[in-house]
Image 1 (cartoon, rainbow, N blue to C red):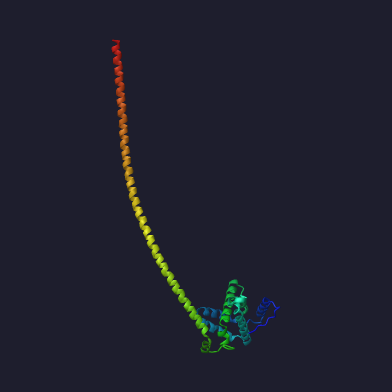
Image 2: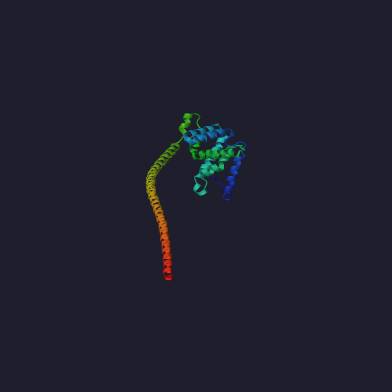
Length: 264
């Protein structure tokens, strides 16, 4: 589809005008009474793409035909825009963030509830863009009415996505298993090193205790030897004092004897 925009037009102004138009519609593209159904559909899509897309098709089946056609046109336009995301930087994530809040009007005053609704609307817009062919083209103007017919409209893209996801999951599991095995080996290696270090420390502890015992014995022996030497020294001092006293007495006697002889 060719979207003719004059060269002199500012593309940002055009995008803002489109968002303003969507916001000021008397009724949002997806009527607000479908909000809870959209929440359920996105939750389902997270765990089962096939069922989630079927639920979204059922929601679109219930909205007015005018809303459906405008939604289809808008999503087709956004799908065309994201094909040039390498140039315009508007991929599916960015487009769904910008246009998602304009798909369904909510009147939440609680900031947390408002944030959850904004994320949900971005998510459902993302699904609409990513699976445009499954939801709008293959199912023709309106989705088939029976579950069996709806099941047949889902293209092979969904199954391919599931196969890719399964392959990625298997690869992630194998990678995780390899990493776990490596970690177990590293853990075993570290455990061996720790055990060896503990044994070395135990050996050093025992050797230190033995050395400490030997040092205590040596210290006790030295104390005893010192005590014996102190006792010997004490007696030697006493003996020396006794000899000195005896010599002094003898000297005194000798001097007295000499004096007596001289007097005679």
